[in-house]
Length: 411
Image (cartoon, rainbow, N blue to C red; front, side, top):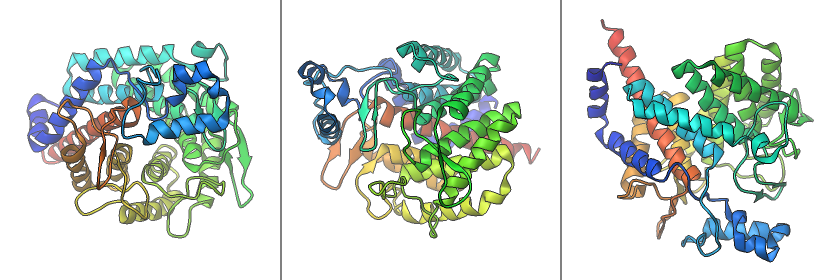
């Protein structure tokens, strides 16, 4: 894209471009690291008291820090850190901006972030090797279904990071980034557990090698990773596993097009960003594998999403049946989903402008959540800043790409 075309895009979306620049400067000043909404078990106080060994205490601390309107992490000695998934989103944002602007600082930061991610693999942090490269979080965390130790690999973290490496390969043309993605595909194929479908074809891919939780978005994220790598390598086993997971998850799609979060009885909610994951993954699977027979399920799912998760003024609902809290994670994923699955730049712009107006601090970062009565000003590096930087960059990249295509069509 030449500079005149780029300037036209910036003139068309000046508020969004300025928002991106302010957030980018904040994240760069912070060194791409910070606190996370689920990092409570990194508390040195918790470790010193031995409470980190009790599942109930672990859940309680995580929920306390997540829900507190005041950031208690300094009091509990929770250090800031590099979150691999967050770094993956930052990598993707830098690659996209470099591709569109040609500005070298974006490329330098992209290379640095890619190198940092290769330092933070599960194997390098724990000494435990898996069948392929993989990543977890820089904190342990307790869910109702299972406990994950620090750096335990998950399909969620690994998928988003792999997607960023594939973007880096596409733009920077360095084969080592494709090699990383190919390696990660082996983690999905060989290390994740496969839970048979009692109601039809396929199987569910587990959240991690260490559990058998049936979480639909996690399984579909595995499908997306495999399909994207397959689009480069044409290795049949990748698409076979990916499709088996898709078949399982589509058997759990409800008549109205929605998905619950997971199979367990206590996972019976429907939320915006996990629904967005499902739709985006299904879209990418169809595109990479050429499996257009699944498009009706995608369209039905998107219709439910579009009809249930947005207000007229651009707010994104956390749950399908109630508005609050407004959460920046839901906002960011909504931008990706409505652009990719709905081709809807008007709604994406409205979503971003609403978030910028109501949730971006003068210092550049975005707030965690808002309700009718309060705003949680916490500046979480992965949950909020990395996701919003990714969404802003994706919006600018999408619109500049479509503007270029439109102009080329009239030359």
